[in-house]
Length: 212
Image 1 (cartoon, rainbow, N blue to C red):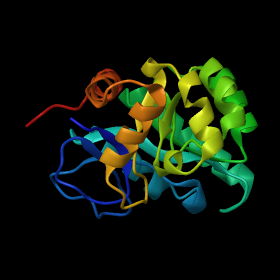
Image 2: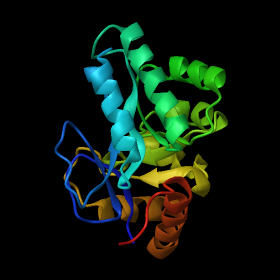
Image 3: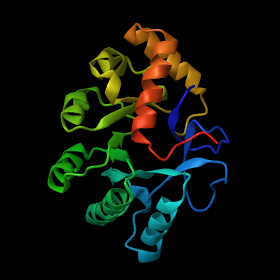
């Protein structure tokens, strides 16, 4: 099975986690729910909607949420909304799918202060210079379509332990198979072995997932 932990396209495939926005989630979708930093707002109704989603048996994670220094509202607003969603993650025992743009230092500080029990996953990871710091802080890494063209990312992917790795398509319409294929080639393991690794990580992390 090819598990895809983050997609912006609705799918009835139970191995895909759809990134919910507004109310466009299909009843068949497994999904993540969160206020993206670009849309961060102190609107209590919006924040409470995440808590409501988190109860849904199909909601597997809180996300994507995080911090972005290039786009979105004032940074302190982003941080406040992020912290409120981290609280929901902890209360509902759901992992977090992180959006991070030029804000890893701040996220690292927050993680050390909050000491969350739930797993954090740095989605769309493509910053080869951050891999050690991210892993040292116990954050898992999800690789997307950038692995097909980003040479520096290809060079460091062997530094990511199998137990810390996820794969995703994000907003790309590329087939997740291409990403699996490329990673298996770089890691010099069979496609079947990589599938088993990601499946084990998925089931261990997204504990509400089940077939049927």
